[in-house]
Length: 117
Image (cartoon, rainbow, N blue to C red; front, side, top):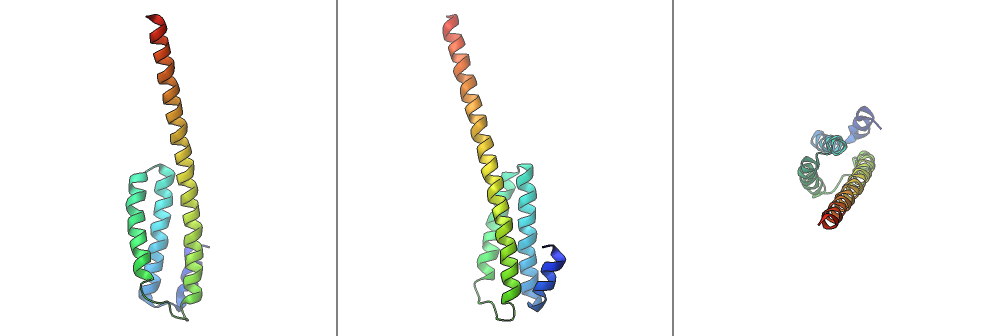
């Protein structure tokens, strides 16, 4: 689903609610781009903002007229979140592999130094 399709689905929402949902989508899109670049510090900052925006949005009930559009927006956000989780998992695996390489190199150099003495 692209932005124009989402905006069409959110046409039944009040302007303020539509704006807030589109802001959430934009925040998630930015988080994915930053995660792909490896800018995890900025991703974490945006996650705090995104969480606050979600709590704020759902602090009041969703009207029946807005429920379908909001449901579609939530499905999109869940999909984006799954992408983020996948990127985090990949990065975690890469960091673990790098740490193993460093540990192996350290061990090899220690062995070499011990054998030279």
